[in-house]
Length: 100
Image 1: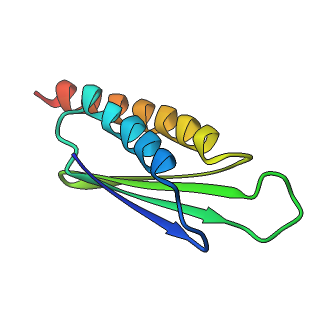
Image 2 (image 1 turned 120 degrees about the vertical axis):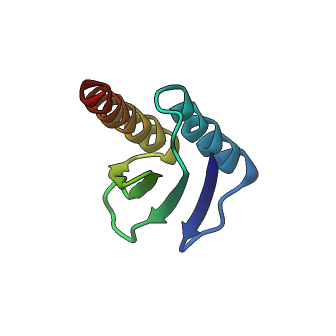
């Protein structure tokens, strides 16, 4: 799967990019027809501690899933978002199996 990562309003270091790619590539285990994924890492200019926004769009044939999480760190956001995407992909896979 191709993972496109864009960091908005800051420069992401290589460790963060590798971490996000690892997490997103795990989605292939749950649904092997994933075409690509776009990840947006954003920092909000607020005094709130949870100012990191992790947004992911995963494209599958005929559909796409979007998850947006706001957390204290991008790593936490990636973990929560990938867990949510896992559930959505498993659900889609089950629906497709039911139609066969």
